Length: 225
Ligand code: HEM
Image (cartoon, rainbow, N blue to C red):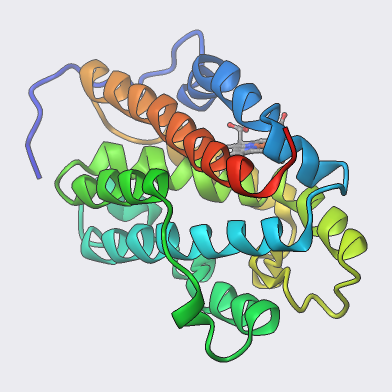
C-alpha cells in the first residue's frame, strides 16, 4: 500500500465524506436505477430468466469483489471495509442452485460487460481506495435499494422462504438502517488525503457505470425493446 504525503481530510469540515461521496455519485446511481432493465425488475415485468441471469452476473462480480476484499483485509484503508458478515457468494450459490439446479455452474457465463467489471475489480487489489469504491457501490446498494428488489422479485416470481432471493437477506446484520449509519461513519473516519478521496469518488462513478453496462447487456438479452 502506498504511503501518502497528502494533507488529511478527516478534520471536521463543512461536509462529511459520506455525504460528498453520495452527492457526487447520485446522478450515476439514478442512471443505474432508471435503466430499462432495472425498471423492468422493479415493476415486476422482467421475466424470471432475466432475473436469474442477473443473479449469475452478480456471482461473477462478487467472487472477484470478495477475493480482493480478503486480500486487502490487512490494508490500512481497505481493511476497514473487510466485513466477512457481508459476504454474498454463499447466498448467490444457494440462489443459483434454486433457480437453475445443481448443474448451474455449467449454465452460467459472464457477459462481456461483466468480464470488464470483474477485471476492473481485480485491478483494485493494489488500489485500496478503489476497492472501497466498489465495496460501497455494491453492498450499500444491496442493503438499501436491494431490499426493494428482494420484495419485488419474491412477489413477481413466487419465491418463498427467501429461496432465490437470499442474496438480499442480511439477517446477521440486525437493523439495516443502523448498519448503513455505521458504514457511513467508517467512510467519514478514513484517514486519506484529498487526492485519495477524489480517486475513491471517481472510482465509485466508474463502478456505477460498469454496473449499468452489465444491465445493458442483460437488457439486450432479456427485455423487449
Ligand atoms: C433497482 C433499483 C434501485 C432502487 C429502487 C434503489 C434505491 C435506493 C434507495 C432508496 C437508496 C437509499 C437512499 C438514501 O439513503 O437516501 C439507495 C442507496 C444506494 N443505492 Fe440504490 N437503488 C437501486 C439500484 C441501485 C444500483 C443498481 C446500485 C449499484 C450498482 C445502487 C447503489 C446504491 C448505493 C451505493 C446506495 C447508498 C447511497 C448512500 O447512502 O451513500 N442502487 N438506493
